[in-house]
Amino acid sequence: MAHQFSVEIHNFLTGNLEEARQILARATQERDEAAVRFQEGRIAELLFFRQQLVEKYDLKDQRYFKE
Image (cartoon, rainbow, N blue to C red; front, side, top):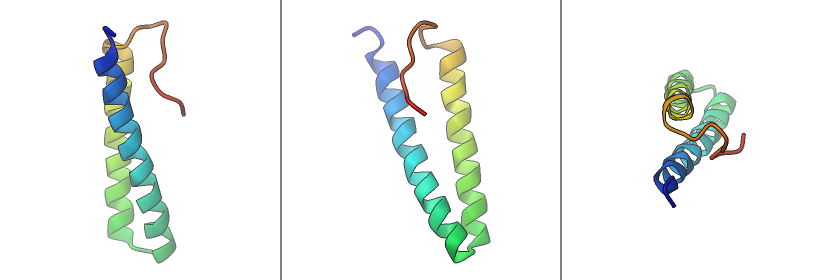
């Protein structure tokens, strides 16, 4: 239970990543360049936060997400 907060943060990030990727796919099909750029930036930020957690806070012997 000590790392339950890490699990919850990763679940939050994963949910937002999935949503952003779905919106990105729709925006790409609709050729909405502004939405595409926004979602690409959103995905980059979420991946940055995930990487920070992995490098600085998560246990080295446990993975909290699947990708």
